[in-house]
Length: 93
Image (cartoon, rainbow, N blue to C red):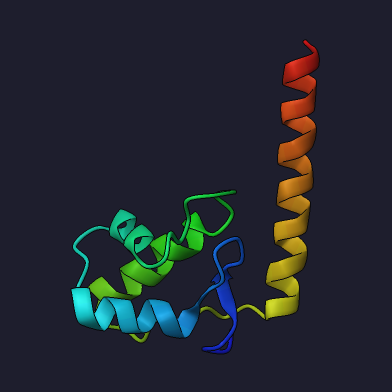
């Protein structure tokens, strides 16, 4: 993904914003990335990616994701559609 593309689409948190946040705050655990404009606090799709980025930071590697934004966005749509269907089925039951 490119630095200007959003990792957390719900809160419009780009890879660049997350990289800057990590440089400034040096988060000890991945959940602290939520302090960067609420990343990962809505639909939950980006949490595994936030965890991966945090692990890159801990390992001293460059924080990057080797997925295109188009693929990332499509997979997110599928995730949210499945999540909505599960919630609808749960509410109906």
